[in-house]
Length: 315
Image 1 (cartoon, rainbow, N blue to C red):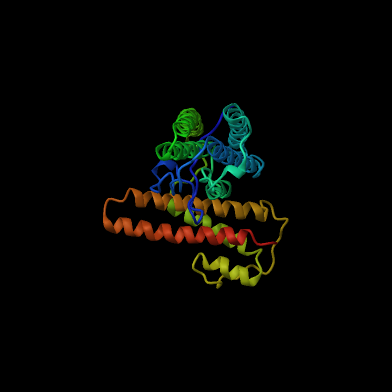
Image 2: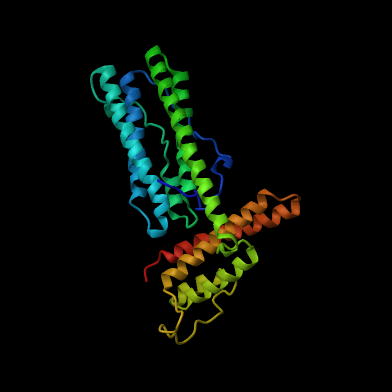
């Protein structure tokens, strides 16, 4: 199965996916286990809960999206089946260890969420998500599992719990290495695809041209909007609703585009602009350049959020 390049998960306000999720400054594990794991049954109940939740959330993305999401969906199909297999393995190990399957009644606290729903939602909602980014996100999840189980091992009060937690940490580390290989293959495939396209590559890399294309898309989009929503949409380009929509529109004109395609393209351009301005802020060499890039990024992020909200409105 061949994969293409992926981008990382988005941020709280659905920022565009970045190329290298490992550069995120937030810690892998937001909170440590709140208490020591006291028994093997409790430990396996935690592991089973985490694997089941991961399988469910990966499965949702494996069934989500449109045709454009297909390369990313394929990755989540693989991840979904991996987590189902992990859950089955945990069940067998638990039966071998204590004579019964994991049971949620053994839980004394809510297991740490290793596959946050927000990260996956960001991936699904981004128009720039790729297979590389999906593999990168999966790597991050297994890194988080490794950190979690090392905490459990460190807090363990019995040899059995500590040894089993260490085994689960080693498994997460091994899985992470396998996923990094897939991530690397996806990256190379994407680079090769971009290289093969050469000068025919349709990706627009300049902010000025993207802003111009976005302006055109918003004006086209506004023609289909009722007055209150049209004003909100046009305010995103500084017109504050002062640009009137044409009184008539010939839908049969050659080259006329479906409204959904215009909406999708506008959001893609807005997301690309967010990425460009964020990258410029990361690479700024002086304070004035940093402040300007941050202002542009802030404005672009708010604009993208508004475009997504308007695109979700009925009609």
